[in-house]
Length: 199
Image (cartoon, rainbow, N blue to C red):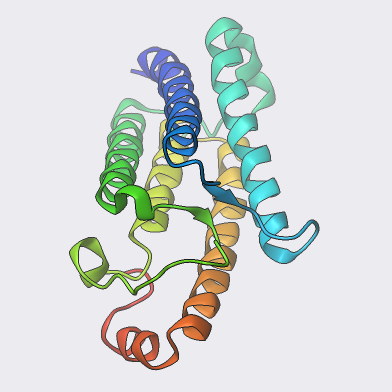
């Protein structure tokens, strides 16, 4: 199972990188609109985006290189007590389910999807579908996948990625909620009273 996970993680993160790159480029080409809004250079949301991108690239490259060069595991701080098939399999399931849920939310939003805070959007508040149950369904899917990654590759490396990833997701959620409160002060405040940030 550990060896299968090595191959699976390399293939999974390569697919994720390709999926989002192609998806963003196609949507941008089709709509002639920007899809990614990190914010002004060096502002808090810009840092959120840069840190998240850095760790996403680090995870992808680590997974590919450990498939090609298994000895890299010696430098990742593998937690041997957790590196057993039931834990690793649980991680693969959570990782895959979290990503699948994120993609489902992504496609459900359609052309309304943006990465970051688009100053001119949204035109209206979305409170149906997945947003009936959580204010941040896409971030919830990403957090689930991140926890799955920690279990699929239980190590100090994936633990640091998990901790920083959850911290950045929370910071970005707070920033986006502040934007929505400013855009829809009454409606979003009422929505916040009825729907939790996460679950």
